[in-house]
Length: 191
Ligand code: ADP
Image (cartoon, rainbow, N blue to C red; front, side, top):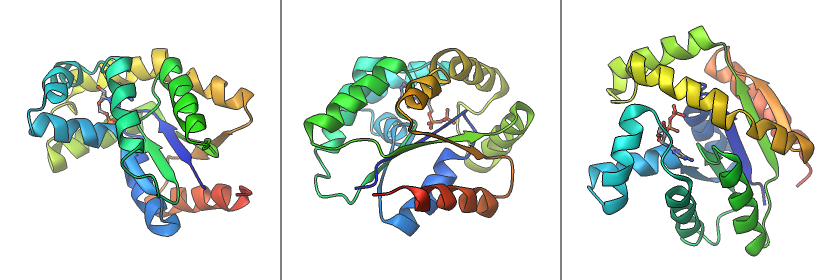
C-alpha cells in the first residue's frame, strides 16, 4: 500500500497535486480542510466548533481532528492507499497518525514536502479567494495561517526526516512540472 502525506504551507498546492496523485495512483484522498468545510456547510457539531478556528486561521484542536481521522480511516478499509492532505499539522497529530495506521497494520510510505516561497503563497491564496471565495483566504487570516505553519507544522519535517521518510519537492513551478517531480519521487519508492 502506498500511503502518502502531502505537506506544505497553506497555498503550496497540496490539494491540486493530491488530485493529480489520486488520478495516477488510485489512492483515496483525505483532505482535512475539505472535510471540515463540509462539516461547516452541514452545520454539524464539529463544523460549528471548527468554523471559529478556521475563520481566524488557527488550528482546530488536535483531539477533534484525530477523532475525525480515525473515523474516516475506518470508512475506507479497502483503499489501495491514502493521501493525507492537511493532516498531520502538529507533532501530536503525526504521532496519532502513526499509531492509527499501525493499529491497522499500515504505515506512512513517504512525506512529500512542497516548498514554495512566501510571496508566491500569498499571491496564490489571494487569487484563490477571487476564484473560490474561501473565507479564510483574506490577508489577515492568511498571515495567521502562515505563522501557524511556521510555528506548529513545519517542525513535523524533522519528525519525518528522522524516520527517513521526508522528500522535498520544488513547488514554485507550473502545476505539471511540480507533478512530474512528485511522480519521480513516488516511482522511486519501493512498495
Ligand atoms: P491550507 O493548507 O491552505 O491552510 P486547508 O484547507 O488544508 O488549507 O485547511 C484550512 C483550515 O482548516 C486550516 O487553517 C485549519 O484551521 C483547519 N485544519 C485543516 N486541517 C487541520 C488539521 N490537521 N489540524 C487542525 N486544523 C486543521
